[in-house]
Length: 216
Length: 202
Image (cartoon, rainbow over all chains, first blue to last red):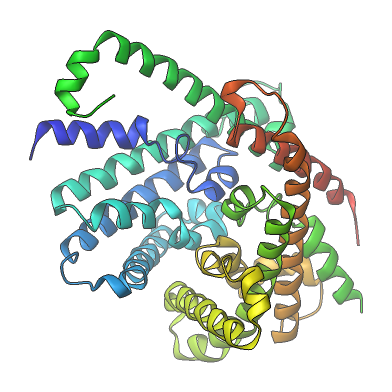
């Protein structure tokens, strides 16, 4: 394993290609399950687990699956892991299973997972694919947790279910608040990202060129 | 008659699939640049949702449940939807080339639209349907009706957003707010408008 490539995979998943804020994929669970921080973490970890498993299996089978039927094959693999996660949650964490409701089976059609399968796991070795699944999933989890904390603190005056104060603005837990908070978070993330990115690039232009080997 | 009215009001307005339940957000944001695109996608989704409900509800209740294979539902449903979309695409291409030209490009996108899988999961879940049906019991007819009107709810929302975006996209907004953020804030106002329907009691 090559350290530079691992670093690139980690930075891509967490920041540069953050699935929630940079690529705006997997929007349905992001909007629906960030009313409370705990739901955000639960959804994020479920997606991370499925992403690692499906990336590993798809990467192992990448030379066996004919490219004409690759999408149905990917969907079948993903659906199998979603079914497994659903059964496990139902058995061991029933409260999370209840609060995730219909969004749990809908992980099958989450574009992040199919996107990583198509653009990364079907072209790269198993080890890198597992890491890519891990970091993309963590990027998704961090985004959902941040939004969950923000909406829970302002909207219901609590954090991870623990009561903080009586002051609450219910707009933030409503469906309209979900769109508003997501929009503002994307704008803030991209604004800060572009600023830092352009500063780093200006400072380390030559070093970055040597590191990534590409035109900036 | 009361149940019919209830299903229509609940599916289109109170539990609107897009702005209240957050299903099908990807096409809602991605295909709402022009009203004609939005309308085409809305009609295609409505058609697929109606046929999906017609097929998946009997499969679940008359095949999977008696055999004790409920755990296969996700895999079975996604394959029903994927093959249905493919068949529909072929059928429309053959029967009506004009219609195919108008909505053919939207059809392949529907397989990964979570609103379709969402409606299939919802109609088989008694706890989800209890608030919609009241005292009536669920059957295939109601499930198709729910599919049709949930699809129309999606159409209403996406057409509304596209109408707003045709104007908003030309406004002089801050650079960081351009694109997705300003669309999200626009969707926020539509969601606020739909919030009023929560006050309806039937």
